[in-house]
Length: 289
Ligand code: AMP
Image (cartoon, rainbow, N blue to C red; front, top):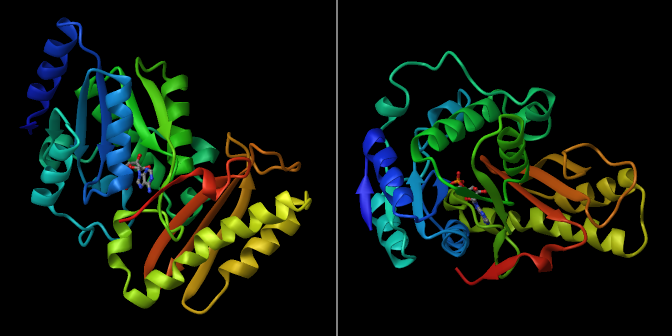
């Protein structure tokens, strides 16, 4: 595994590999790697001959007062984990190289970027989509792998690739959870032990909606109420529970393809999760962490 820091060196590396006939898969991350990220690497390895993993904590996607400064960072640990999963290139661009100046032109997703997470975090998806497009332009991968854990993000990245005719295939890999259901997230590192227990409210909420639906409840408002009942408990501040289709539109008719999305604050930590009803929480990947 080699580190690449300079943008032109990254571009040249991909060009050389592709000239040799090798395909390149790309996994963008903000680091503090966990098994969720590493499964994306495994998936990337299945899809292409070479794997590039980037670590860049993107200031553009954090709002004022959010956790950009204190976002967990541990490069030596990340390097060891990436090496263990046979990453070929660890791409570590510097902030000044990615943003020599505040970007004037940004990618926005209109109304789809302003609902759910976008409503709670104004400007967040413009920050995400802009950096993803920049990273695509630098790394120039054949395929890029994202996690379904960030359902709205993965949906908008897919949409960006389609709408802007980007020459990259977007692959979305299943959510990785701990055995008790908590979705892995770098932000779980913020949780004190009692908060870690409270954080199970999110996956329990998803399960409750799923069970309600399997039990025959087809009314979206009733299913949302059921989810909110489970989510609402001491130490947890619910932000939303919603039932949407794969295009992020609220559903009137609930089907196996309907996605339940949830966001809540546990103490000061904001967590999100989701499940495709037909797959169920049990259909995601469970790991002992
Ligand atoms: P992040 O470092 O949080 O920006 O995440 C980088 C990538 O890893 C994104 O595509 C996320 O959706 C994905 N990811 C984060 N957590 C998980 C998880 N628990 N399961 C699957 N993918 C994940």
